Amino acid sequence: MAYNLARLSKGVSSWVLLCQPNKIFNCTKIKHQHVRQFSTVLLNRSAKAYNNPANLGIKKCFDSPSLCGLRYFHTSKPRQVPAIIWVILRPLGKLAAILMGRSIRKWYSALPPNKKQLFKQWLMANAEKIGLVVAVLGIIGFVFFETHIQETPVTKRKRFILFTEDQFSSLADIEFQAQLALYQDKLFPANHPLCQQIERVAMRILNANQDIKQIFTKKWTVTVVNAPEIKNAFVTPTGQIFVFSGILNLCKNDDQLGVILAHEMAHSICGHAAEILSYTSWIDFIMMIGIALIWALPFSDALAAAFHFILNKITSLTITLPFNRKLESEADEVGLTMAAKACFDIREFVAFWRRMGLYETLELGLPPEIDVIKNVEFLSTHPAHYSRAEHLEGLIDEATKLRASCKCPRLPRIDPRAVLEQEVRTYEAKMQAEKLKNIIVLDIKPKSY
Ligand SMILES: [Zn+2]
Image 1 (cartoon, rainbow, N blue to C red):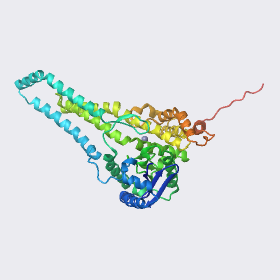
Image 2 (tube, helix red, strand yellow; image 1 turned 180 degrees about the vertical axis):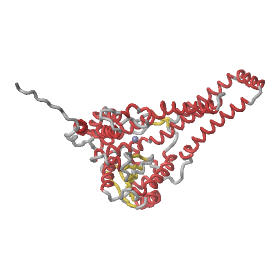
Image 3 (cartoon, rainbow, N blue to C red; image 1 turned 45 degrees about the vertical axis):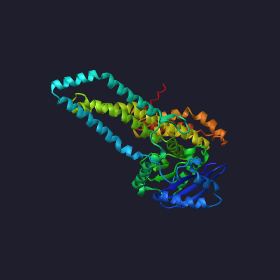
Image 4 (cartoon, rainbow, N blue to C red; image 1 turned 90 degrees about the vertical axis):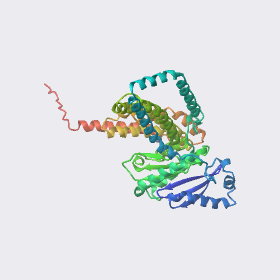
């Protein structure tokens, strides 16, 4: 039996849920007022709950947190480098590679011709040794990469991970506090009906997915920001979800809201932020070799800078952006299964992304059938909305079976995808009528002779 903590917050007020996953999701709800003081309050309140003889499950986990897969109750922190150090070091590493390459070039160009000749001869004489060193470094790099391969939660995909959740938590907390500070004047109050709806939908997803360990290792919160111009939502690595009212305005029911929340929860559960930082750090490390080489070759600074720029663009288009899009698709996939288990109308996933694609094309003043964004998808960190809809459409049958296996009620008779298609047809007809409105049709009737 596992015992764990979950948290939901609304705006700047929040509460702790101390939960026992058994047949019925059993939670002790502890409300407190300030999100920023959450950690302190959490431990104090948890200790109170621990002393309650009714909470034997909690006691067990306090005594042996490793049994429950928990990280909340470490008495001493493991000695690990916080991920924020890496975030700072990465640009410095690239700068060091530029300076090193440039210094080698300057040093070599300042050598007199005879010394240059001697250096070339030394290189030729030691080519085998240099090759051996490069090969050994390559093998070390390969072994390092292979020994940091882990399985992605839920999908079991193999991936490269450099940072543990503990290393990442300080970075996530900084991000959470920074976002709260940024939007503090725009947060919806806790008693706002929109917040209550979001809480209800979020808890429905959490309750239905208790078989996923990470549901219990995150500090789940939802913060709703009143920003109608932003059609977006995001999640921190530790499960703090921010939803902007711009995207909520597109949601007409709980099922559509479930699409957004399940997708964000999936990102956090799969540890995508840690994976992105790990993978891009690794790519940056390899790129540093290329950068140092570019700046060491006998070009001018301007030409070296141009080659450096091209290297960055090629890496971004061929490695970084496709990698980001792959993780987005995975979050869609995992979010779909989570929503299916929570008995949502999963067809809304397809309809929602089609609707988003539609709004995007209409905002550009194009007819609904043209998906211009799809044509420039390769430039984006996210798949085009219509691509997402297509990908999810291919998964609907499996998700429907999963939903049925969870003893959910039958899907509603009205298919939201068909509703959207009808809306598009009505819109097109209206636009067509609008175009023809100012045209005078000259209708001549033949005289009868
Ligand atoms: Zn996403």
